[in-house]
Image 1 (spheres, one colour):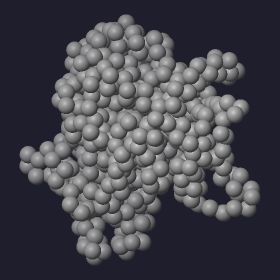
Image 2: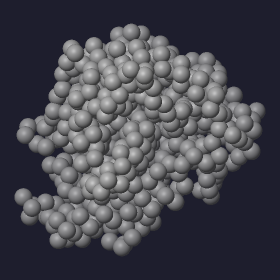
Image 3: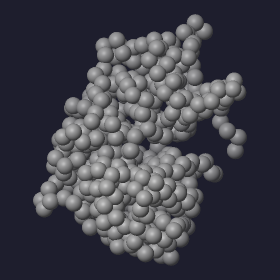
Image 4: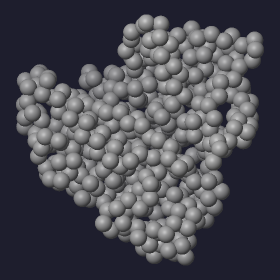
Length: 539
């Protein structure tokens, strides 16, 4: 098998996927069997500057070079060859946000990530005007807010895109975007073929008095469905990835996608009545639907899958940041006592401890809001740990409460979607490094969302693998073969690693325990509101 894989690499019969996530940039290389041959990653962190969660764009290229370089070293170590060509490639990155450039490619405003939301009143006004829910973090909302703020650069905007669209543009020269990522910028028409024309015209009319005279169709990327041609890697783009200059250009590229779309692909949840949950710095559930949503709700984002199927997203701004902070503290204590351990050992030990906790976490409640949370009406966050004097305050309950809190806001959103639209989900699939400790996060999430949770053995590969699969679909699909069919019959099939799963059904005692936790959590949000109001940072 090793010799065959080596030949695949030498012959360029591979697909490269790269994802710029919120805390990690990862590159993976897969073969014709869709399994990972090698991977490399680098870490980065967003920072709060002048009230904006952002990254310097130079960090993007530093991280891409580092992750690709590590992948290249891994190929050399495993197979004894230098990675010089690949058959196809795909880019993925955090959805939403705000990136605007002038005609010379100069960034006109600081990059705003998904963690930034415009004021709720702005998003509501735009929603009412368009008759379509525009979330606070969408690119279109940021554009409108820039106008209201009196930004003097609106007439200079030549290109507006997301992070995946930006990376793809620099690598290929093409100003395009995959349908799912595009639907997180501005509404797209049914089927995901283009941005909604009538809504775009209405927004143009609204923004014209503020200095935006361009057509949105001219400054927005072209929307592409999975499998469509998105250009190829340019010589300049190859140099941006490979410091050693070995990577050959002219690699065919699939449309760049957001982490919501590649998460669907990596979990085989792009078909109707399936959903996936990504657990990271933010947490979001993306559900592929049988029909479009009828109503216009602040709690639900209306998207499409990479293939254009209607989808809904419940997006929670706050994910593992508070949990990770506590884990860092416990690690510091352990080291101070002379202990030695790896990060995986630390997480595995403390995650497993959570299973020993009481079903309702013993009266310990955590709120991990590091930033605002639109689902519960917060524009800022203050991390809180709350308990009663007689609560069972021990490590097991503490860890259970921390993990429970990750899914509390998500639970509120899923309940709303079920009650309002009758959306049926047969199964939720989890992905991301959070699920590396087998059975723990999966079991507690099943209790939180009242649904079976399946985790694939490939869950830790995440969106970079999903991007590689989208690239493979573009390059290797048969004529007339749809994306859902390709995934079902050629990727997640038989006894392949991709098809290996762990399924966790929620237990009745866990369901009852989490429901009690949620009662306390709802009351605790009143305390969180007071904390935000009374503990304002000095300006």
